Length: 336
Image (cartoon, rainbow, N blue to C red; front, side):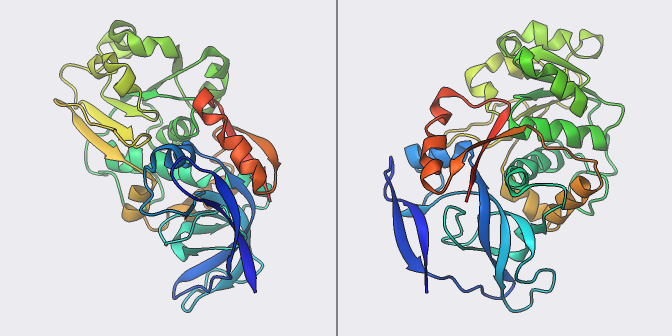
């Protein structure tokens, strides 16, 4: 028995469809046959820069939805045939761009019945990154989670979300609104996305160009005094350092930066934290089950619309070719 892997052969590509042995799950592991995979900027950055790749060839892909193929010893929450969504990282060879991949059981959740495989595949990585940015970076506890955040502290009451129309930014807006019902949440994005972001919980939105104007950013905060916290979902500070001046002078100056580029650096003079999707799982092992619960209860929506770019592994390369030209307000998905 064998499977097909859509391997990236070396930094810069190309892809190659390669035959590999069928994986067997270890203890507390699950193997999944993906029915859909979502494409992410980190996939393209791994190809171009080798951002998180230790050796080549490599199987990429971090977001997937499909059916459980087999379960390892000690797994009781899943059985073969279950429809699931998964964050596909953490085990060597666990990338989603293959017929069957292996992951730890804690990065898997039952697929909400109302979602298609394509919709479900769009959810894991952006939810986990947004959750990490909030609980680890901003020290805000999410309702219904046992870990993360600082429940006894004073949470920020004004937050600027940079890159609101990215999947991570739109996810963060929803989670911030759940956690801080009365907070002022201002997001930056192109005008076409403002209505959608406000429907997710943003108090107001600014044009993306405002990221180059610290005065405009401060003016959008309560009393024009600046923000308690900034959640940077897209690494905007690296290109627009004016965002570092958007804070309230006597506030906590919390800056939570989602890792989106291999050369990400934290600014001085702020309570700055660099976070990624794995950080959410480190503080809250049940985060994926929490995501499925929120979706099932109608409390969490697809952060951005999905666009199916094709069917089959060959469509992955076609979709990834769009990232250098910008993908905004949309999650690209491939049906398998």
